[in-house]
Length: 471
Image (cartoon, rainbow, N blue to C red):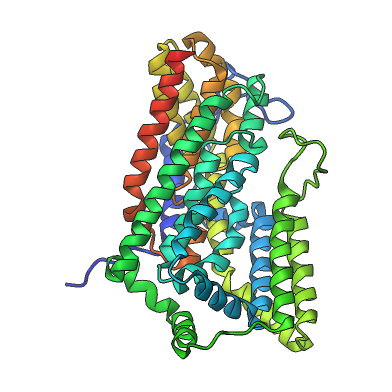
């Protein structure tokens, strides 16, 4: 009898689209009245005529999702082209060989350093979708250091994930939610800081423990059977190490790596809303995916010219690099299709209304506990933190007043539950895209992370309930 094989990310997401469409036949259709900016008006929920989603809607959902996500999908393809040009110069290969040689057994130091940096990005400006650009860069480095692709993916996802989960001044989660709740973004910052420090420390310990275990015994890797797909890189780097000769970076390659680093630094700077996080002396550029796509496209051309690539070499390497990330763009399109089905089927507001009805009249501790659980459910269907804040906070925050729970606690419950779910749900385009890039089956990511996510659940909900009692 053949052993069951877990479906690919594409199939998993298509199954979820079909299940969501089926739910539109079972869940009553309903809507809130909305203000001009899309904010729902509490107490205005009403049933509407059903709009069940059929086979045709399922087939169209992913295409409509692609239209909705065309900005991030194009950004990913441009980043792929940029990386293709950089790889063509040989600078990355030579740079990795030099890094591994210089670390000489101290590679584990990369884990806490990078996770703290990604955590800071997550907590300050909601670094999440932007992490997609870092996976193709860091996966080869960690594989060359003797780890597996899962370590690299975990460093980025859990590092940035703990930051977004405990967003302190993230304008796309805390800022939007605070605005809808009519409170300052600084309200509740102490509880979020405590959550950030504790959870980031646990995440670093968790990843370092796994990395040490597979470094000692590679057969214990969760992705040992897929590491053969990285075999070409491993053989090249092993040949460099066995030869005993230092790989010398040419002047052209040094310039390439410098421009490469500056491009990523520029990306990070350009998306940080300095004015909103209280740093007015630095100008806020406010760039998003169109501007970032232009940045990487321009950088690819400049690097190609500096490396003296021929016109055909430059264009071919760019197109081939973009093709390598085409699968990730498809993942994003299919995952957005789930939201399209829910909105067209008019069940998003109904699910939100059920949560509103359930929480009415409960005590403060019970309210804190169940608001967290409700946001866990809502986050599966609405993985966008800004979208979830817009839909739910105007309704949930006032309910906290009647239960004696501060609105800052409601916001903390919202963003921590959303952050937790976005680390595991297949409806998250970032998760499924990252796993595709790392060639990690979804079930192996689940096996790797489920214990850690239980720790995060217990600690985060414990902190929320503790601060509910104190304040």
